Length: 469
Image 1 (cartoon, rainbow, N blue to C red):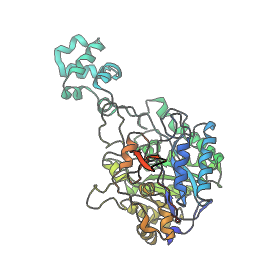
Image 2 (image 1 turned 180 degrees about the horizontal axis):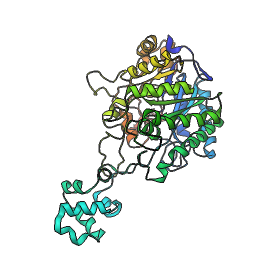
Image 3 (image 1 turned 120 degrees about the vertical axis):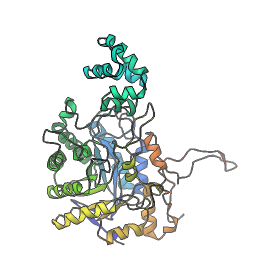
Image 4 (image 1 turned 180 degrees about the vertical axis):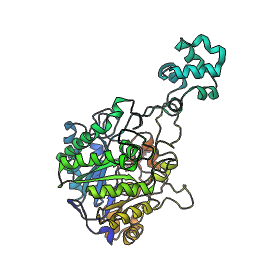
């Protein structure tokens, strides 16, 4: 089978074209440190002998980000090295290990109306003018009294609140405050082009020290680098607007990383073949970006779709907006209920178009396709058609980390199929430990009666498997 043949990924040779993409399991400490549960998670995938595993999105800044892995300081290297060692040992050296490097901007939880109007809303002259138009003479005595105006706004109808608040202020009330790459009035946003290349390069250097085989630059979904690439990026400082300017920072980040780690370390990227959201980038933009990435020397390109904040559902009070709840999120992680086409291989045409254009230009950059992959025949058809060079599977690999090995050894009937109901994604949305509904539960056992004494919790790694059992 083509899927089990070797492939060159820049300086790294993978023994198979099977690939486990980055999935965040929420098993790190709140300080971003590797735990034994993190090590167990990746060792379990490695037992299935995939060609490549990509470690979860790992923050390049040394800032609080909950139980998400970080690589923003040298103190993280030793913990990350434990993952590398565990994967190489569990796979008998057959699996290559990359780590995904991510940057993200501030996203706050949706506040209550009381908190928003009493504490968070900045009373501007424009808000006072709008309030005067809406409330008329009753607003005159509030012109110099912010607290009085806050109280009136809190008690106003939704219609009046919308008429008085600006677009971003209304969004902050309804969905929580969220920074954008276009917020150049904020110094930390304005300075991103000056800071990010170094931060990504530092992260890649630490990954190299920890023993990884390469890095995947996270240029996809709802995060900083994807937002620079998006057609919604209207920055006027040379880093937004036209395609040429939107791709500028991603190229500068790549070059900074390449300069730091050299050509003996694989450097690729995951980016969007289609933003999906209104006004976002489309396939023609992605093809242009791929042309530039191929010419720059990226070692691989992994193609995804959607997963944006712009069309996400309004969160409940006290919760943050989640980018995989709207139409673009459903395209990113489609379920069996998405439409009559179903979830299987929806993103493949994007990867195929990008690969075709790169080959026309003479670029041999390996293309990784993903999205609703759940059978070896499906993967084989994609490779046979030339639509991609590598076929990745996230949710199916979560359901059964051994499925690559089972198929290869002739135990295909034992593969545990993903139901594509997004049980795992619902846990991810809550930032709690991700598991799979296809895994069984663990139980306390009475040693004498060998009987289950109580129902257990869902196990935290997939059940063990071996051909001998």
